[in-house]
Length: 118
Image (cartoon, rainbow, N blue to C red; front, side, top):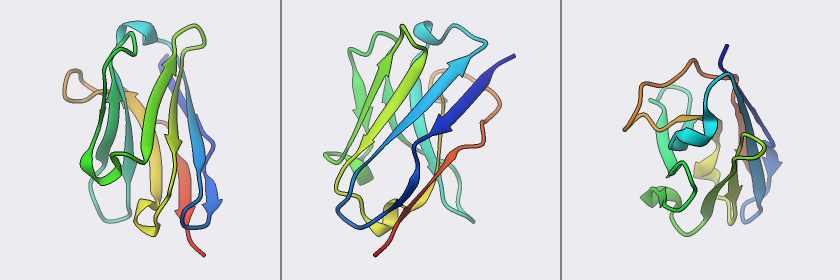
């Protein structure tokens, strides 16, 4: 059974930082290109960053380019998202999954909530 468990969210002031983690199980994590997504209520889920299976290539989308860094530890089946210089518009629920541009996604986890506010 595939499980994706996100953690690390919280309330942070503008300009602050957070590191999100995603523990994956039930599938060959190290063989998949993975991604972080975010969803704001009333909007579709947005892919914000992806990383190849080995971690050699990373793609960060324009809204968060230069502020977010995606990484992974295949020995621990864990995906990370380092978020710096956070802005109020980054407020969302964040999820991890395989990169939907390459694979059909697995069932979504519960996500982790990030709120950027003063």
